[in-house]
Image (cartoon, rainbow, N blue to C red; front, side):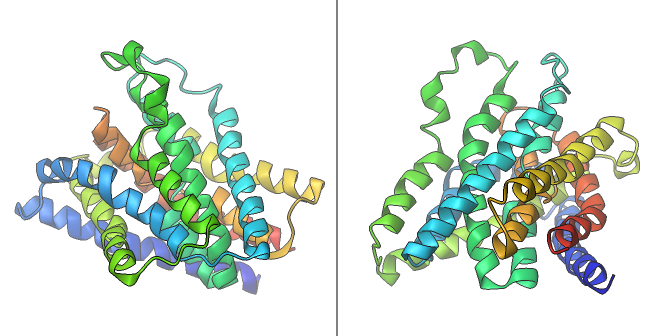
Length: 314
């Protein structure tokens, strides 16, 4: 019980920090300092520059050894399986492409908040080793997000039939992995004059995304945040079904134990990613619905994440 309460407090703290920044964005929109229109104009900056820097930096800051390479490979495989599980479990739901919001809910079922929720929670519960394993999840998140995620959000849009497979590969997320992975494998020690700008740009990811989310929520109608039944189904898939299935598979097969197992389940149980809102803006979906979905599932995850973490340590 004590462990459960500790994990609950850690998760709750991260959500509070997250929503203080969102609240700042909300106030900025209401006062005209940073409006939704400005946030939409900033979307490409986040999409094409800041997020890729986060990916490249994760490779530049990880030391290569035989153990880290093996652990990273296992963690990466676990993260890939997590995303595939999310895709499979969400497949029966939100299938009507003509219902524009279905793309948002399907995306939110699969993609978790790796950068803000998973990494800090792993740091608090598992220490630096947990952060390293979760960094593999961040990498796999970007690979899936900029391939499958782009396809989900782009389906049904005008000109979608002309969307080519190469666009699933030649995108900021995957290109960043193609740059960062060789640097890690070849043990390239990049000079500070290169690494520091990448770190600085990447550090804007969470605050800018949160401020943008606040502007979207300012225009979303918060009184209806708990009234959308699709959000409850999305939450059930993302933060309950996916981590429970992953926990069952990994424990039964014995593929992971200890810190690696807990890190994997932390990733699997993370609430829907802020990219749900960012991609909604990018591909012309309803950012109000996306904002409320992310907010609702983030609040609910305060209760579910500690339970999932405690189950891995039983």
